[in-house]
Length: 318
Image 1: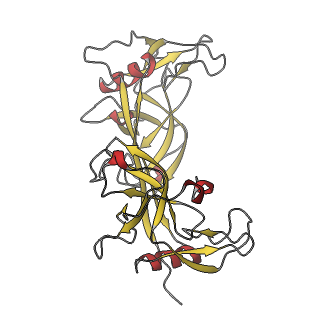
Image 2: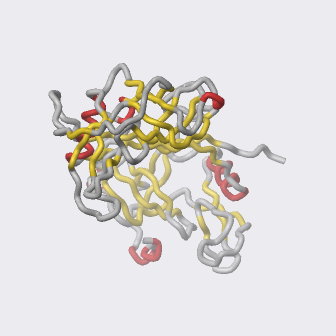
Image 3: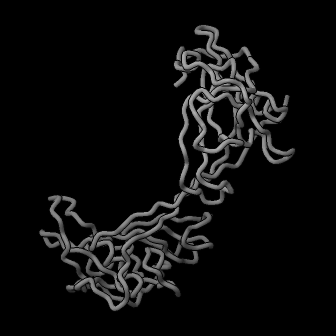
């Protein structure tokens, strides 16, 4: 039996958003070691602050300052911190209701072990040494049994001496391990030999590349392997004008759907060897394979020099 294929995959992108006056004041305040909340029409103080009352949907902007001390309302121990989490050593995720607030803030609680954490534990903010106007300006919470509770909310203008924080960039990342099934394993093995292999549906007779192990139209298992291509036809395409991070390809370039000869489902690939403004529907292309050890998939597709395919031959694949 052949070894099971596995690959570590990462999906990552920066999420950028602008801030309204309430969120801007909150993050600017953290940079200045000040925690702000917002008071609703009913008198509740919400921390973190929101721009609209969760009960009435009315816009709210009555900012108040709350204390940097509070009480743990609930918690869960994290014995194995992951990359990018607030602390590198085991810690507790805790909901902390800061003094003067009516809602709880989720953050890390630095404690020697789960036996040192409990509901009702008094804690205080540990500020980050360098603060930029982000939730990470609160490095974590730490136990503070000497502090006392009390309503410490007081009005705040939301204005600070430094420049206000008006936007944030939050990195989104997903790490996972991909294990292909029978059909995908055969497809990947063929790519290593510079071949394209799909599977044919026993009912509708369509050939799918990459194979999925089942026909997406008929819902029946596929098993008959069919070698297709390697040449194909551009069915549709887009011009990319924004350079992707960590991708060494100069813009503009073209990404296209390519119907390989003998396949009934187009796959996508980059078009090279031709100016971007000369790529067109019906263009006949062939794969350009990477150097040995540089990857399994074609690096890009280039024109074959053949006449363009007739529209009727690929219109069903658009």
